[in-house]
Structure formats: structure tokens, C-alpha cells
Length: 118
Image (cartoon, rainbow, N blue to C red; front, side, top):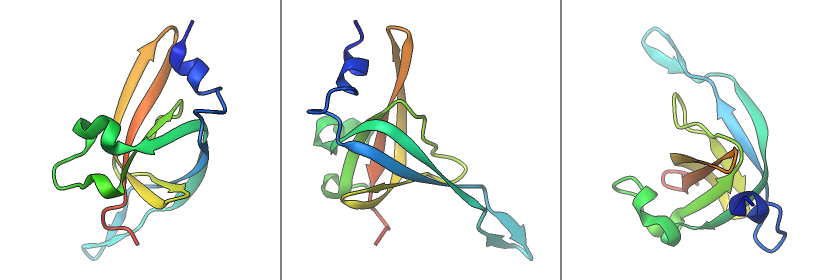
């Protein structure tokens, strides 16, 4: 029995299938950064909840009001450019990724934050 896998198939817990925008590392021309190309992917069934549940995941300087935790089976990236996740609360930047492996599967608790985004 895998409780997290079961949870991600439970319609009462899953909040959506979110679109992720991933940018390649920037290149530099005349010492000025040129943004890398972007691609999109989907998280698959995922659960988005307020970060108050896991405050320790937030980096210093981030506030709980604009922060959320996403539980997903897709590994999101922090580096070289943090992924952006489109949610019903607006676009959010990945600020932390914590893998959790158990019962033969890997899941990710992803810290998201709106800091610096419109």
C-alpha cells in the first residue's frame, strides 16, 4: 500500500494537473545575459496546498502568504533557472524540491513562491 500514490489518485486531494514552464540556462553576449529557450511540461495529478503545512521548506526571506507546497510525481528544477508553475493563484517559482521515495515510487514535495512575480 502506498498512501502517497493513493492520495494522488484521490479526487478529494488532487487539485489539478499544472503546467510547468522550464527555461534553459542563459547564455552571455557581451557580458549580458540572454534568456535561454523555454519548454513546457505537465505535472500530472498533483496537490497544491498552502505552505503553512511545511514552513521549514521556505527559504529565508519568503513569506507564507504567497507560498504553496505542490505534491507531484514529476521532479521540478531549482537550477539553473527555477521552473515556473501556472496555478489558479498565479504563476509561482520553485524555491525548494524534496524527493520522497517509498513503496517503490518517488514523489516530490515542491516549495512554490510568488515572490518577485506579478
